[in-house]
Amino acid sequence: TALPKEFAAMASMLKDCVPLSIPEDPNDYIVGNVLIQKSTQVHRVVVAMLKKLGTQMASAATAHVTRSFPEARNILMVGIAYGCPCPKEASKHVRLVDVVVSDQHGVIQVDHVKITDGRVEYRGIPLVPGSELLGRVNYLEFLRIAKKYPWERHISKATGLENAERPDDSEDQLISSDPAKSPVDHPVDPSRRPGKPLWLICTAPLHRSPRETKKSPKSFCTTSSVATCRSTPCAPSA
Image (cartoon, rainbow, N blue to C red; front, side):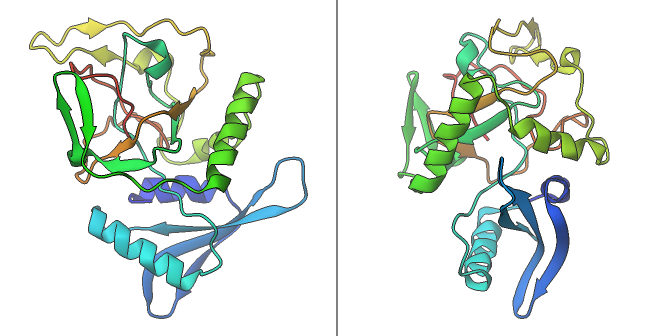
């Protein structure tokens, strides 16, 4: 995580959470457990917080994680996403408090993305996530299709944090990027349930900005901020 609010959100979802310091490792850690669904077993989870924003800081923090926890099986980048609407295509439209995850395309830095004549080009190929994580994403998508939403019980644990109550759907206002700043209607999506986040799998590389993006003060602590329409092709970003 990069921000204290993201660090706090992750901590709220862990059981038996304790802070941890490691000699010659500058990272701030919390360690806790996540109960495996329908089991008494747990996943042991370590969460690190960056000293400041930036890709270099993220790389350094990850290097310390792999050195201090050589038994770590997977490393996840978790954080708040900025607005990435697609009002012309409901299946790609990301709204306030939605949950977005990458598939095999992984994550790419946003300034390594070039859009020319409606085509999206990537400078460099992002690293592919491991088969274990891809399998978990597919299984969660199966649960969504079966109308089961296990992630919601984890998200609900964060609502006790400061300013973390889920905003009303009416606060998710879409504004055009034209000079008139005209309001734009959200597309109708029958898969959405009122008052609940939507789980979306990004079928293109997620775009990570190396610079801080201004967020709405009412943004939910683990999801997207108020969105703004763009004239570029709809490509979920995070």
